[in-house]
Image (cartoon, rainbow, N blue to C red):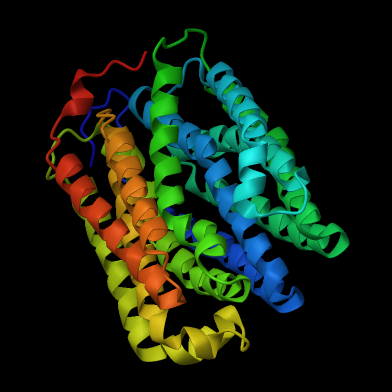
Amino acid sequence: MVSSDTNPQAVPTPTGRGFLAVGAATAVSNALGLVLLMLLSRVANADDFGLDSALLTFVLIAAVPGLAVQAETAARIARTGSAPGITRAALTLAAAATVLGLVCTPLITTILNAPTATPAVLLALSAGAYTLVGSVLGTLQGKRRFVWFSLALIGWSLIRTALGLAGQQVAGSTGLIAGVLTAAIVTALIGLPHVLSVNGRSREPFLLRHLLSASASFAGVLTLLGLGVILSRHSLSIADAGLFAAGAIVMRITYWLPQFAGTVLLPDLAVESDAGGPARRHVLWLYAGCAALCAVGVAFVGAPALGVIVGPAYAPQLTASIVLFSLTGSLAALVQLTVLLDIAKARRVMPAIVWLGCAVTATAILVVQPATVTGLVSIQVLGVALTAAVALIATWRTTSGIDQVQYS
């Protein structure tokens, strides 16, 4: 329970209903994302599926400003009941993300080895739209309206999956990203009234700086998670890059599985000054439990389930490396947990740590140039493990950094 002397608005510790609602919604949302990947792996050939998967990895990276806005909005609302200036800051960050994406269009097109620049342009526009969606979800999260949060997340995921798949069938990779972009725009427009209700009249001068710091952290985590897929088309053959993309589906499952715990407990983490408080203990045990569940699942049902998840064309070739894909995702989830702690305690130390981990991992892949899927995922899991260890040491020692930060 959060005491009133720590939080003037004294909101209760989240109930089982909140965990159940957000857990179910997160599962459904991730399942829909995986359904999209699974269907793409069946309807597209290996070359096209490799490009589609790499594009969806970049969509995750483009979503990081939205994740930052969501986390910062939720933390501020949990502490003070409002998020002054969040609408202006979110719009500014959305515009900046879009412009940055457009500037990087030639580079992204080269990295993807894509035939045209159109998908990269749509990715840039998606970055702005996802930022606005983050303000909607963060408002509901900070208010602890977890049922409404869950409904919004499921609705957005349904629209995104349906439009993405339909777009891919009509216009290939360009249509896929166009569908994802449209879904984000629709969701942002529907949720706009909720954001305006907590915007407040004053403006916090350091809000945009905090959002940029959080964006850098989330971008680093998702880049770390997607490095294998992104660089696979340069290290492996085109066919093996498609095979790696199929294995990365398992990586994404184990990465997203524990995220509901951070979503529900972030408001408590934002107001909890004790480093050994219940919110920290709960979130750590939940993440550890999910990682253990993944390990047991891979050990006992990995081979049969693999055929269902990635399709019969890829499963036989991935059996030997499935444990490494699962472990990579679980470790990346742990890195993201440290990012949430960093935001909740306003420490701002994670961007440097995560991007250093990305640099080390990418350098290792490019220098070694692994010729097999197992070799590539082995390098990636070592890089993610090193990053997770450093991040845990850096963030778990923080005790009461939030108490010295004034949000408004």
